[in-house]
Length: 349
Image 1: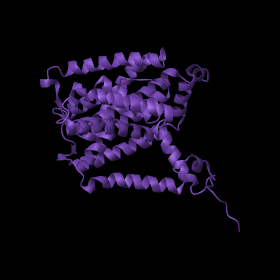
Image 2: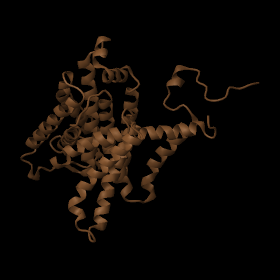
Image 3: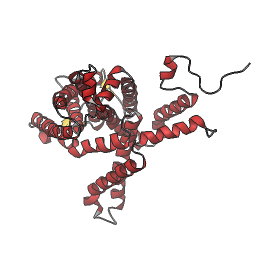
């Protein structure tokens, strides 16, 4: 009896599934298993390194969703600051809230802030929105500075992550970060496949055409800014727990541009999960690589220290230019091509 060859999809759910082949299941299982087992290798810097990638991958997921709708924003580092400061304040007396309460609250506060400053997107769009969100960034930073003006050194300390009086170790904190990232990634991946995600793509293509088809621009743009702000707030909350403190210096304007240029554009615009993760990995790897280079060569070449910031900008600029020339769709597109190669392997057709 003959049997069908290839991948047979008999239902709509099979056709729409995220994982459709055995290779996808196996590769994802190996990737997640490696993440859960990496801290057990004994390499001390790995948990902190991966946690820092997570801190920026989550906000970049939200920014990717926003940018895919042609709603460009450079206030996301400030929104991370909103989430981080909210977490630091709520974790201390008299509130003393646990992380399971502070993280969602930080996301909600950042989401509300994002919606408020995103309202001009109803009248302006594309690159003009960059200028309005630039103003929003500095307004948010000024408000945060005013709130902590009476705090010595404007340093707000965060109570250690824990639950019911128990303080998490670094390993437990790492696994908590990892679980939160997986949940946030699954959520935004499904958002992209819902009517909301499709409406945002339509608004990004032609907003007036979307309006003609009955879509409320106010509703969907506000939802886009709310989701994006929530993700930024959650990332800021995790950042606050990781560092144990937060200051105004952490939420720089340069960081916002790195998240947009490297995290979204280089990572892969429209790839909400994998593109965001790859963009965050590149951001952290370059920053840590430059720090390691400067610290290693500082004795022989003391002039490297003052010029390290310039190296970072030059390298990021070169990476953005190279990616846009070689693969305009970003690192996520390269990952897709790699996956398709194994989809067909060992056949060439």
